[in-house]
Length: 119
Image (tube, helix red, strand yellow):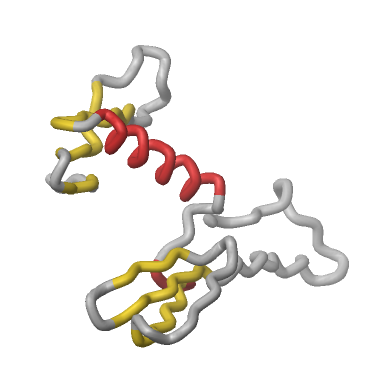
């Protein structure tokens, strides 16, 4: 079993699997457990909600630019900057490409509504 979390000198915040409410359709319930500073758990939750709102971007759309730490860098609002001792990394996710579902051949009708496929 694996989990995701944030680890910092002030504590740790981890996702934990909770007992799902009885009215769920086989989904899972996830919570955040914090040991140490509560702000770490709040940040994990806020980051996760932002990731979900952004369409759950994955590493296939990730772009990374690396700069020397002394080089000027003016990140855009959608970029994340990680500064390391010798390098500044600028991370950005390319927008998701809309999925195009081909139309059925002329004269044929689909048996169901549109199929947009997975995200």
